[in-house]
Image 1 (tube, rainbow, N blue to C red):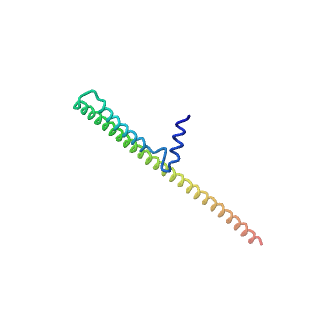
Image 2: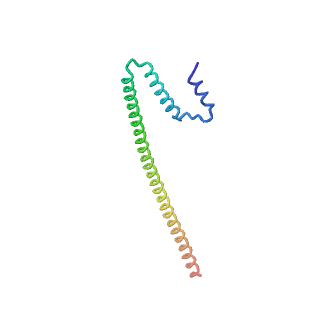
Image 3: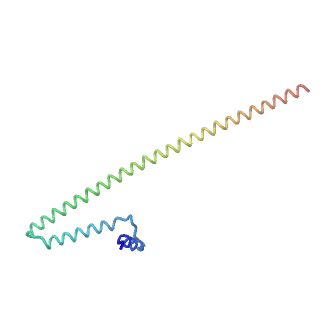
Length: 135
């Protein structure tokens, strides 16, 4: 039996379930830590004082690991934010450059067409003048 498919099908039926949601994993991690700590205390071969010291040391180590993970995620988010801002700036600059190029091309085209029209009108006017003077 394909348990992964069965589990994912069951979760897919839950309206608020999102596969990218990591809160369930964090809750499961914390629950596992708590169960492990309780079982460790119950089955510890050491004295109560020694066991409490070991639990305290493990809790401090876990706290440090969580803090390090949080800072790592925070740094990656800051780096990602900076990267997105840089990408946005480059995109805006590219759009401005393209818009300026198109605007200049249009102005050049417009001026060429106006010059052609003026030249054609002048030529027709000159021909009309010559024709009138011959008559």
